[in-house]
Image: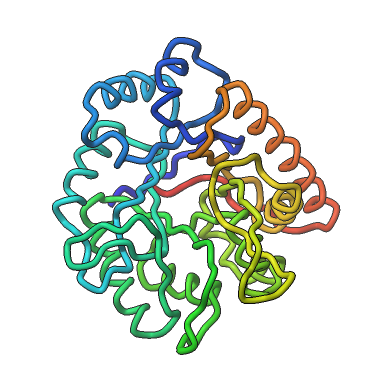
Length: 299
């Protein structure tokens, strides 16, 4: 496993989706880094060639959606090898995936499904994350999920579970701030307390994305937040992001947008807004005398 420290610009990058590839290559916008889903490129050699050219000019982060580290049947090593070949071509600065499962008996599901937070799940995930890191030869950043239901047999809270995974595997964390806000609303916990409970020095990236508000049929008059990545970042997520930067330090931040894609200029404007809110959080930390978290990533 690589052990050198590589600084990455702590500004806000963008999720790079296929419709914007040619424009990015042609216009070279001022964006500190881009993040891609490898599964969008594995069967698209033309898009991959464009991305290889883009990677000559920008740091690239790779965010997997099909490496199901939570599957009881184990990690799909055929898929893992395909992603490994892609990663070797792109040489990303960050490699990440989800605390979830999405495959069963050889079938890929179009959802990132939750796990119970138990010792049994810890043992399973520890084995699978170690396998993934061994294949890629670099740390894997694990993203906290967007939650709608919980398991009655869970024996620990999510931050405690993530902290233990970091200790057992040496993985890093991708802190999705919008997911924390969404899950706190849906599950009834304190988002600020959640952030305070994370192992600060193991957070290597922050995510922000949009959600939709829907009626909650189980609670008359109640609402549920649904993680769609189809709208601009909500004001409540921006406020929580400021607090995250205050507690965790200035980290590489990604604006995620997967559905109802606007023009590239609109996404860049939202990334600039993230830099403003990060500055607010940084000044709050300095005023409070909080220690600065690291802003370099171990590869």
